[in-house]
Length: 418
Image (cartoon, rainbow, N blue to C red; front, side):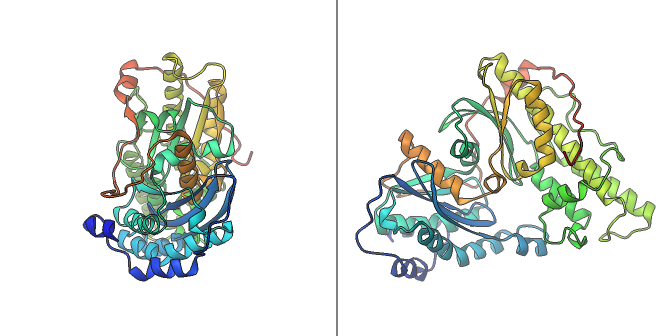
């Protein structure tokens, strides 16, 4: 435990019983012979405790997850100390279940990969602390994982995608466009200047009190908006997408949130409804905010594709647009991006919905990718730290803005159920 004591100021020390109990319950005999390299991935960057074992052929041997969604719905959002405590209570069990489902012992692993950046500091600390104890006990290489890089590369687990490709990462904590040129080679084209789309949708859902809606009471905010929007008229309210005249690939969602908030206040007054009650127009508002969000994401992505093709950063013949992150599971937003992809002769690819949200599989797979490339494999973990804030790749967003590419108008209109 020498390493833990040296960096005790970086994250809280996990109770000794955690790892000792884990070791007692794990096989300590000779490791089984496996023909493939095996990586254990551990994810605790936000509010999901997840783990998985993936081999170098892309097979998922086992996985487990504990979601905190139900707890955070009751508190009206993620409370970092609560998330930290829930990670502490569940990480040992989740890793045990993963190894058991994989029918392996820690000794069979080729490496342990763990999210160390970016994310909630208290949550990241739990995963890193537990991982380092395993690394030290079983003398395994450690692979620190960048959470957004893992999201971006997940598509290579499910589809045969070669570098380079364009990726749009949209979630509750992030929104960015990047060109992926290699396992650890990213060019950042644009990012959100304020909050992420998932965060904005969650806040709108809370403002609409959708947790009190009988059909949405167990859904996250984004899921509730998507569900209710199917019943609404997206054109009943006119809401302009943000930054329409700004010719770059950055995003903004705070202004949109404020516009929706004012609209809700106006409708509450008009309908004689107090704050906290369900508006009769809630479905129309949900549909409008979802449509506006989709249009905003589509236009910035359209410009990114045009920029990459103009600069010969993407192949004109087989350009690929990957959309990942929790918001990528929204089918309406996917359809809007599909319109952009078709208009620009790109292939749109999205991981399966369960791999769009945070999971251990993407972390383990990123570890496999790094093993293949020989990148970021640590045999000495002294001084390793988590980074709550961490950029992705090399930022070329100024170059994108200087190109000032005008985007042709596309009609983002389709049947919501098609």
